[in-house]
Image (cartoon, rainbow, N blue to C red; front, side):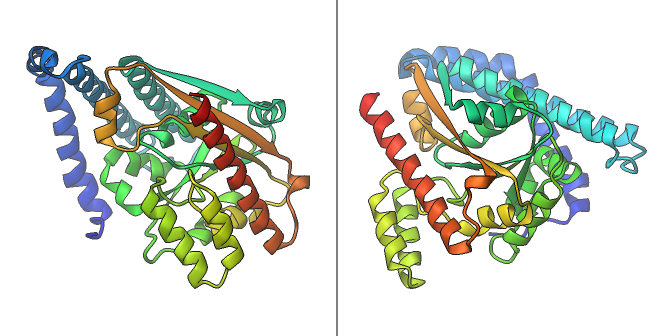
Length: 335
């Protein structure tokens, strides 16, 4: 992968190009919608029209949010007051508006029903103020990160903190919000992700939620296989055997989750599972004609229930991922 361009180049060259693309899509929307409408009978389920409407909705929200961030930069003294409490709230408001708008457009246009099941303890942990939480989420399917952020930011009024791949800086909106809000960008090839996660955990405010995807990337059969091989090579045959028993999740990498828990003693954990996301754009296209259901399950683990010993914590994390795997299997059998 090519290195991400310098910040100055991203702001002065890349951002205007992306803004121009968003604006061009909106200007050309009548023609795009006409072509999609004419082509839709050929594909069934109005696939082209639905896809074009989703793209246009994203472009409109993306353009407006990016320009709003530019306005906040100017209003904040050309970046001098970005770290102030009022500016942080303003940037979270832009992020909330963008995430909610894109999420609702996709759900409506793709005819997706999202069903959230949660324990009373999980609901209380996420809804009450005064205590930050660490959210450990399954990572599987197109758009699951949007769902996680929507659940925390829009439904629970939690300020999500996320460790993101450096390549996401190529999106000007993610780049700006990632920098101005307390997130971290890392290059997995050379960055120390665990150090960044620990730093974020220590900085958590009372309404914050630190989001970690222990699998590291969207689930696939190939990633599951590589995770098992990694455990074998590292001399953990028992954990490799446990990973082989899990069919729907990859073996979790414990470093990030444990770094957060160790850096912020006493923090509660919410485990998030979901099922029903398409595994790629080809499946998104295939599923568009039919109504879809995504199910979400939230569990709560009080800080007092998390083992103190590191090896026991690794077993604890693997135990939760086996619970996730069993839940996914159950939901797939009943759907």
